[in-house]
Image 1: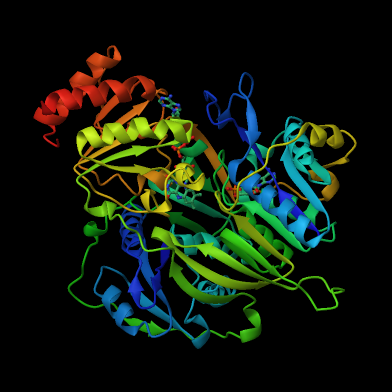
Image 2 (image 1 turned 135 degrees about the horizontal axis):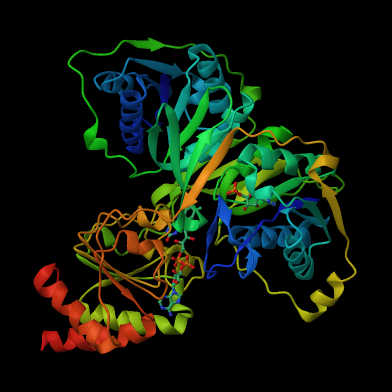
Amino acid sequence: MNILVCIKQVPAKDAPLAIAGNWIKESDIGFEMNEPDSYALEEALRLKEKHGGEVIVLSLGPERVKQTIKEALAKGADRGIHIADDNFAELDPLGAAKVLAAAIGKEKIDLVLTGLQSDDHGFGQTGVLLAALLNLPHATIIMQIDVQEGSSSGTTAPRLMKLKRELEAGWFQWIECPLPAVLSIQSGINKVRYATLKGIMAAKKKEIATVTREALGVSAESTQKIEKIYVPTKTKKTEFLTGPPKEVAAKLVEKLKFEARVI
Amino acid sequence: MKILVITEQRQGKWNNTSFETLVAAQQIAAAASGTVSTVVIGKGVAALADEVASKNVADVSIVEHDLLDSYTPDGYCTALKQVVESAKPDLVLFPHTYQVRDFAPKLAASLGKGMIGDCVGFRNEGGKLVFVRQMFQGKTAADVTFLGAGPWFASFQSGAFRADQLAAHSSKAPVNAVAVTLDAADIRTKPLEVFKEAKSAVDLTQAPLIVSIGRGIKAPENIAQAEALAKAMGAEIAASRPICDEGWLPMERQIGSSGQTVAPKLYLALGISGAIQHVVGMKGARTIVAVNKDQNAPIFEIADYGIVADIFEVMPALTEELQKAKG
Ligand SMILES: Cc1cc2nc3c(=O)[nH]c(=O)nc-3n(C[C@H](O)[C@H](O)[C@H](O)COP(=O)(O)OP(=O)(O)OC[C@H]3O[C@@H](n4cnc5c(N)ncnc54)[C@H](O)[C@@H]3O)c2cc1C
Ligand SMILES: Nc1ncnc2c1ncn2[C@@H]1O[C@H](COP(=O)(O)O)[C@@H](O)[C@H]1O
């Protein structure tokens, strides 16, 4: 079973963000693997361990994203594809998905995994768009994947999955989905592994192919445009309490008792 | 401007975010001199269509088919593509539900169009519609506009508009059945049973006081400090999703769109950033207190009282003060 995982590199969780035009200032901040993507990668590695095949990771972005591809290779992915594009941040969801789909279309894949949502753009659309562009069935917000084995002789590749999909407010649903397919993975589906020293060494020999959007023949026409980004306007007037911990605690108890009257 | 709102129901019950989106549509229509048409899709949904017809809408379309009884992305896309092609709207709006995010981008793409998803507001700037959405996990907002010809597709986050502002109408809007062609072979996934994990032992919706922890708690062994604080206050303990994902607290204590929605008298958020999926589950709290070391954390946008500090300094101090206050 060949599995391709789309991995986006995003600003580190605690990175102080400074706005620059309609993106952020990229110098001075750290980047990391988008959180749901690390769960998607883990799921791919587990499926490979169970069913065999290859795990390919694909990332679209500037040179820096190679670091995240390397991290995935160190965890056990077999090879990486980097779509080099310094202006990836200006792509709209459909535009980015077209580039990713063009690269995926060149591979023989049984399953494409994406994270549910990216921490930077946060479109929450890419997986579904890939399914549309590749004409594959899909399911999103996936919390469990059971691949039903193929024929008893073991010669045919698996053709069907039973999936646990998250619904709102603590509800779930089982669904059946044929392979090949595209799945968007939700955080918490598994426990992600750490890269071992051995894995890091092994990764050095693994291949990262680089392609460009132009070489993939995808034009960059957009359906939408980010006009500007800015610090959101507050909807409530927050009263900030300051001072050393003991003093702040005393002030808060005072406020909650006599002003808000909630304790 | 012709606006088409795709409402959402499941097993004959509304997803109430549908009405919030209708309010958004009415406001856009008012700002951009438009009309609002509504679609109710499923099977056996005539009564629901009748209900929307009494709101201030131009007309209601019923899209019914045996193959639309249970939701599937293929079924909904195939049917709604036909609806959009024949209705020729300029703007198609959806509530940003888990179901919508599962199919709407594909519906738009099947028509060669894009979607601006998860919007929290809009503005009409000299005839140009600007949609506001969040980026960077709520740390920034973004103004986004459509390029090119319609139909344009957009979805609105739950809570972005207030359903109680829905304008009613004295006369009923016309309700039309729209026939769609669907084939069982179009539908590649098969929906099976809907279920809940082990029945929750705690009902946080009834808790008057909630102390909630986020990833700022760092490690499971630190949860005891938050629990001591909750105990001193007489509060229930709750958490953001990553804490439950890690298994540090059971999922039944998760607050947010995939967990519980609560409206306590007091919600004390400790080390929670305030991502929209968390906020939709707790912004109804009467008083919100946030403790976060990052003064720009989005949680402060909705907090009544804010403390920019390390929770590990505040938690023990607050526990002590609460015990003192009790005497
Ligand atoms: C479809 C979907 C559904 C989701 N459903 C939910 C849901 O139901 N509930 C939910 O909560 N999330 C949900 N999420 C996830 C959500 O988007 C966020 O990722 C999550 O809420 C972040 O949790 P957090 O605030 O605890 O962690 P983080 O975002 O990592 O924030 C941690 C915060 O702690 C602060 N901090 C760190 N250390 C300290 C310290 N020592 N003292 C003080 N402050 C500190 C940091 O400044 C930061 O603001 C969902 C996401 C998706 C895409
Ligand atoms: N530039 C990218 N490179 C690789 N994968 C991506 C990229 N953008 C989005 N994805 C994938 O699509 C998912 C959803 O992203 P988004 O639609 O931006 O919320 C991510 O979790 C990734 O798996």
